[in-house]
Amino acid sequence: MHKLKASLLYFALVMGAGFVLGVIRVPFLVPRLGERYAELLEMPFMFAVVVLAARHVVTRFELDPARSLRLQVGFMALTMAVLAELSMVAAFQGVPVAQYIAGRDPVSGAVYLALLLVFALMPYLLSRRRP
Image 1 (cartoon, rainbow, N blue to C red):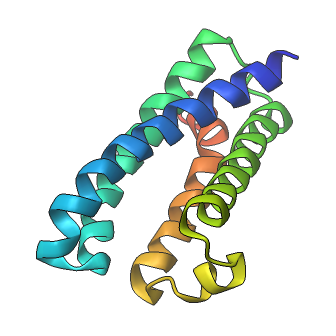
Image 2 (cartoon, one colour):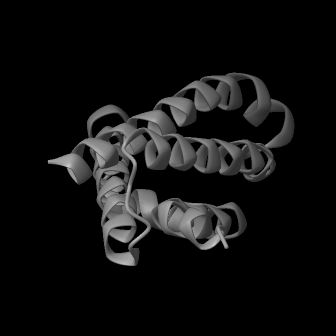
Image 3 (tube, rainbow, N blue to C red):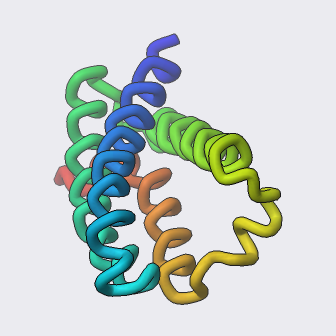
């Protein structure tokens, strides 16, 4: 139950920040810069959110630095994030998931996938920092 609560909080913090940044990105940046550059401009902010959220969750739940526990928290949060995103795409955009994935920009989409991996690994990576 401890790791589920940690995963839920980690997911909620990052997803909430992504929602707020998306509200800024879509109406204000996409028309001016295009989808690719607007998404790429958002990525460093999301990276900072991932680091801060992971640090908060690790500290708040006093997660043991054991690799397996922190990886489980990160990958459970990743699973929640991917399921939430795909559910929202299907519900609000009315686009089949395969079409949504195929329609992603190859550059910003690749950076997004890398950031998802960093999101999953960050609780573990924070444990590697300590001597």
